[in-house]
Amino acid sequence: METEKRVPDWLSVKSVGLVVAVVFFFIPFFIEFEGLSPMGHRMLSVFLMAIALWITEAIPLHATAALIIFLNILLVSDRAMLPLPDDYKAPGFSTFFFSLANPVLMLFLGGFFLADGAAKYKLDKNLAKTLLKPFGEKPSNIILGLMLIVAVFSMFMSNTATTAAFMAVVLPVIARLPPGDRGRIALALCIPIAANVGGMGTPVGTPPNAIALGALNAQGIHISFVHWMAMIFPFMLVVMVVAWQLLVRLFPCSSKTITIEIDSSYDRSPKAILFYFVAGTTILLWFTEPLHGVSSAIVGFFPVVVMLSARLISDKEFHSMQWSVLWLVAGGIALGTGVGQTGLDNWLIGLIAWDQMAPAMIGGALCLVALVFSTIISNSATANLMIPIAMSLAVSLGDDMNRLTAAVFVAIGASLAMMLPISTPPNAIAYSTGQVQTKQMAIMGALVGGTGLIIFILVAPHVWALFGLLE
Image (cartoon, rainbow, N blue to C red):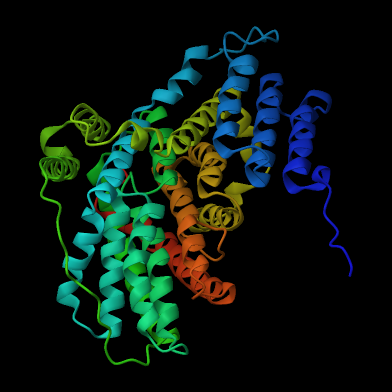
């Protein structure tokens, strides 16, 4: 019997990635790039290192984010360890530390608390069963209902948590369908697709949205919760309907009816009722921000304070939250600050003749590159790397591109990447059920992502401008 050959540890992707990251880091210190300032060279070393680490995940994504903040302080802040040029206006070291307390992170943290509370008190599953009642038992209607409900949940909860909760509802239904019924595939795929697309709808839906808002806030552009929804929600619905039609046509269900157990039992304990009130109040305040004027980030901190004070979340649940995502977003904010302060953004933009391209083509390129990157690496990492460059590009193009449009295009492109099981956690969960093959997921991901790109590139900017959403 032949023994299986094991790849040496030093040849693993992570080990090689770590070596490549170190090499990338030192390249700008030994090679001079024409037109790039000395401080730009320092920032380029951090930027190249981040690319290598985020692509290979040689160290955890949030660890890379922390390293970026640390290196920015050591290399390009007013407390840099190396001498600073006289003509360089160094940002204060606290600027990079403050990225860990950016208001956008507080907004996202509020979303975490609502998501964990909904799972703990089973509000997600109970609401899902209740909301599915009007859709009857016709397979296509059930799939549409599932997609719409999952999308709404994903607008306020983690895509991963939403997918996990709804898969628990759908898997028993799939098990009752005949083995060869293609409706099994549609039911398994509709959940991650709806979660991925639905996450685009609000600032708290997915990390790329938060990264875009953080970058915009850093440049003095405040986008409210409702403003973001006004820009994205209508198009999100269109993409959702297109995805639904593709699913029911490509994977038709041979069964005439589908029955879902819709017996729901809501938790009526005092803590559960208090959570319902807190969640409802938070969402209502987010929707009415233009009326009361309280920032969505401040509103997002409301459930954090109440749920901790009232012990709606236990210490164990508090420690198990996705804190790494907040670090990842903070690292992206710090990276964007460093890239902008050192002039690296202008140098990178100058490498391509953007002025020879039409505005729609530029927007399309940003979206497409974000989608391709996010297919193989984290969408958060893609947003962290691309949004600062995209916004600087918008500034250099003047009237041909809006900074808000550039940031949103990258965030949307990153969220539309859903071709492979590794593209997003919802995809991985769906693939793990054994009901979906990689080829089927790739076909649906390409069709939905491609349709979404076309809609956002060709239609969205004109609608935004028509309704004054870009001002």
